[in-house]
Image (cartoon, rainbow, N blue to C red):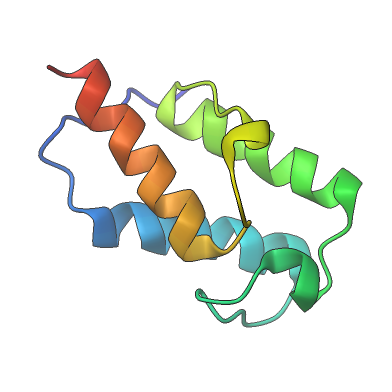
Length: 87
């Protein structure tokens, strides 16, 4: 397991990591501003993506809190959790 990043990790780094995770599961490029479900992610794949993000950042993402599931939204959520955990 990777150690969680500090509060100083830029959101852009989190975004790039999440982009890589989604790209790997879809096996193609993704648009970070478009909901991943609109780009071909299934519910099962989304659960796998969330599990990988949770493991990578040592967080627990509650997907019920998300209004949409774009890379940008996921990145903002993760960055917010990292900031609140490191206060």
